[in-house]
Amino acid sequence: SASHSEHPLSRGCEEGAAQVAGCTAAMLLQGAPEVSDFEVLLGVGVKFRLGDLKVSVGFLEYLSSDLDATDWAQGQRSRGCSIVAVQANGILLGMAALRDTLHPNAWQVIQELKDAGEEVWMCTGDHSTTAAAVADELGIPMKNVRAECAPAHKAALVAELQTSGRRVVFVGDGVNDAVALTAAEVGIAIGAGARLALEAADVVLVRSDLQE
Image (cartoon, rainbow, N blue to C red):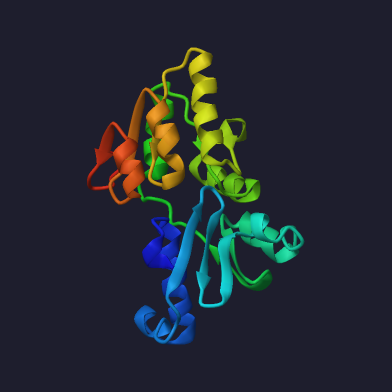
């Protein structure tokens, strides 16, 4: 389903599955039924039909609450990973721990903003444990971290900060960031991000370089 989704993790999931199977992504999908009824569940994942199967792929906490608090899942989140699960006809088929690599300049950019007197927040759809691990690595205080946020929650944070008198610059790259990018005084999209995010932003970093 990676070709149907704009989420940056979708391609990683497909490539990882091919690596485990010892083949290319194209070979992995040979003979598979056509994907139909594809639907993006903003902030959660995707669902679609694969022949007679009703398939869901998305964050574990939304697809299988029984497994959400397992030691394995919590351990992976403490390392900054997000847990993605795959279900078919309501049966859990597997889970994967995925971790975005932080941009090489991310910590430096955040420190420069803080040194200039700017207030830095992190707003993410990831689990709170994952968000805490990443925030700690970047030097963002937990009081400025909002986790497990749907698109509406991200826009609500922008509105909350604006109501308190702040002018907000929002940086994002995903479909889930589009509403907040539009709501902020200045919306900045990362060039390699989703099309909807690029269209919603005021500024696009073509080279995806945070220091631009």
